[in-house]
Length: 135
Image (cartoon, rainbow, N blue to C red; front, side, top):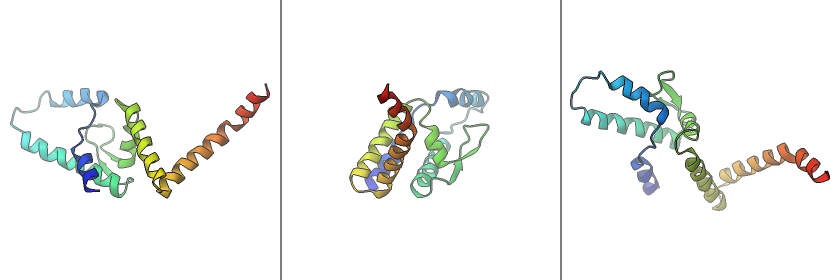
């Protein structure tokens, strides 16, 4: 687990085109001081806050100062939000692969999640599939 945690903590986030303009606008008039140490500390705090919430309790609320309308969100909402922006197709694919590996490895929660999804899929499409086969 240490290797996974290390890998997750060292991962650079994908650029977010929707937030970048807001960030740039806020920092245009910022005082010109060397903030590299402070920025590094804030970065580590924000990163670790989200990572710990995702690993321990995804419903936990974390700070999201880059979103002016919502200064706080749950970690699970941030995860879902990350599947709708830049790089989202790759992230969804990666999440599906991780869950599939866990399910194949005997993780009953991952298997139950996939089973529920497959059941809901079949129930939703059943009537249309039957009607299509009779045409």
